[in-house]
Image (cartoon, rainbow, N blue to C red):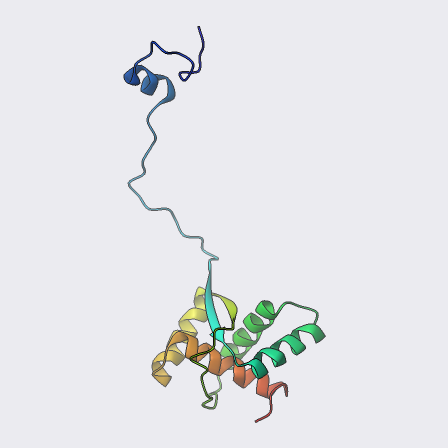
Length: 137
């Protein structure tokens, strides 16, 4: 007699459920991690992408990590950033992976500037690149 129900032809479906067991369905949704990071994809022009990549190469890190770091530093400074052109048609983006507290700060700027989260993150990133001397005014 085989223990595996697939190889037993005379066993019924009810007996198989008794042997295998029914799948447990949870009524509660899964918990979210407390350190979850949220992606904000920041569209950039080719010149801005080049500046980010150049700066990332110099600091020996990935562009995503650099963008994340620059946006975080910009949010911690809390200074207003000048208005910049937003490349809405650009398909090239670099993500910034931010924790909930930084997303909340971006949302505050988003409300203040009356724009989207992406536009606020772009404005902060470009302001930080200009402050670092990577982009010309």
